[in-house]
Image 1 (cartoon, rainbow, N blue to C red):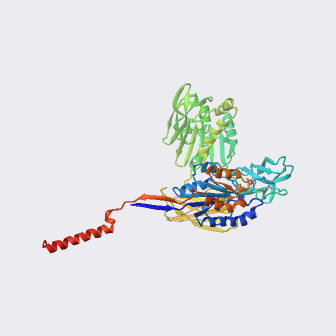
Image 2: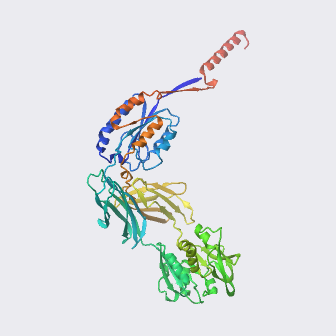
Image 3: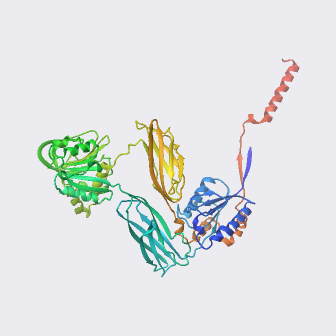
Length: 629
């Protein structure tokens, strides 16, 4: 059976809903007269077509009214939406109304090249550059350390302001912490300033960058930006305890001081009067050197499961060192030493080995290693083996052992100061050596998270990004469970609390708390598992997003190309009334007829059923009459 269906053409209308449309002299027109004109055009088109209306900006969504509040513009999402929702549909035309400015996603010209539908564009906004000062870009670290001086790079842009003067300021807690006068030398002036600010208090700190306005600016909304920075006082504290002065100690100290994440203290073992517990890692240089030396300190470090790095040298007492349970047993054969270069273990996986380290390490001068054999515990991994002369051995040169919560490293030779000098001689810098030392220290000093309740989220977000939390709950056997309910409270700067309950995934928890206004927030979570109550807390900050204020010059050329490439046409606001008749008069926007052959089982045809029933009835009467029954 042949069936013919008719599909009416669909007109898709996409309106730019971003903030850039209201930055300009025609913003009042856009919010009032233009909106009425668009409603009138759509009503006229709806007489002949099905019209579906969308807004685009941060995302594409069906809308009947527009607020022009989106903080970003992604025009490519228009064509992704058409492909996803209207594939194999009879699309008569696409109408795109906007200023042609996009600051997210792909170039819409590339995305529209596969479209076989005429595109009509409505060109809004002003293509003539207007006088405007703006913060074009801010670059800064997310985290800094207490008492550090941290840089903030500020890029100022001035349009149509040649000969004008202004001033840029950085303000913290209503106090000006940086300012500089500016003179603009052209109508397209760019200038990058570096403000060096001091972190004097811990916590999340809010700063505001402002440019003093000048006369006749098109908008003042882009004259300021805010940013947040977290000031922490939690550098990894490293203690180097040496048996005696040695160039190795200086090389290690200089390598670690180049990394702002580390705070290094150096002391001779017989002069140390501090507390070991204050440090994240203890580096013992040729300690112990006698059976009794530093025994109390060594015992305390082992008892507290502290991370330790032992460097073996000519002053080391091997017998006393073997009693420290480092994971490597040194079986000294004689009092002599070998000159051993480094062969990197290709199967090592405790931390990444950069190409610079890999290429350089086997070329560096040898270390003086004990003339001995070595036994490694099952929990040990070798980073580099000893190469004695031209012979590669299985003896460890640098190795690590992890036993329970305790991490131990061993450098089985002295003279790493030569590595630092060798690095400089070959490369003109100490980068590879410093990087190697930092990676060793980072692996040893970082404590693995063994808590039973873990909660994570992004600490820094923009105001259009949702706050998403992930949580994991472990039982005493460290198995993931998610039967108990997890409660979360978010507190804003005014102390107002917002309560949430986590949703469950397969074996963990997740929560999308939505978007929040600009500000600083704290959160705390609680879950009860059996008789145990677990808590987690933290913070996040929401920063303003002002991308729409950076580019205020409309791009009508892009809108023209979109229309021209597809066989459509571009209209200006005073021509909107012509749009409906232009679409209606096109010969190729017509209903589409689809013919389809459909087959149906005979048993579903009722007339055949009744015909057969009638024939059987007639046969029965004939047989009855003829006496066959």
